[in-house]
Amino acid sequence: MPNFDEINRALLLELQKNARRSNRELARTLGIADSTCLERVKNLQQNEVILGYGAEVNLDALGRGLKAMIAVRIHPKSRHAVESFREFVLGLDEVLDVFVVSGNDDFQVLVAVQDPQHLEDFVLDRIAQFPSVADLSASLVYEHLQRRPVEILAPKPKRRRPAKPWT
Image 1 (spheres, rainbow, N blue to C red):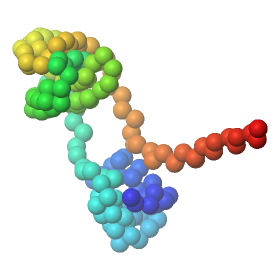
Image 2 (image 1 turned 90 degrees about the vertical axis):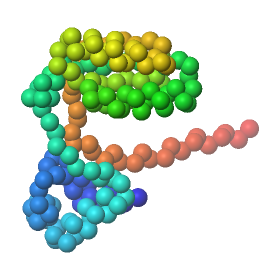
Image 3 (image 1 turned 135 degrees about the horizontal axis):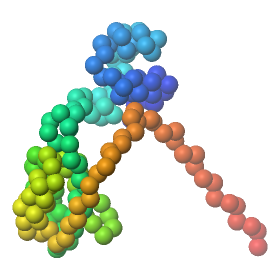
Image 4 (image 1 turned 120 degrees about the horizontal axis):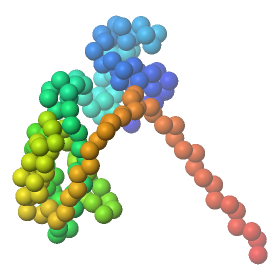
């Protein structure tokens, strides 16, 4: 586990804001040597704190402006059924995110489609037809907010148990 000192915290925040900056620019922003910056980034990658880099895309520009959250219940509740559905749904082009959850539903699937007809066809012809899907419901997403950048939380102090009174 890497050391989350102030430099690593600032480094992670800056990379989340703009990962396309050069190492030199990043080092200058943080007030550290280029070599130190490069070594710290490599360390964060090796320790799987930084998992990768990517481009954020405008779904509207891709013709996928309608988002929906699909709640799915699987039956039977077996490892095979859950794993099979997870693999199936991850292979569908409309799917953005898959959450395996507890509670009444087993999955929450975030999708982006072209229009309401595309959503209906996707739900009825793809998701509902999967053999282990017992029930599902779809909710339109009006707004999808993500908190960025992700901050490193300070470790919680350990709670001390109250002393037992002498009896």
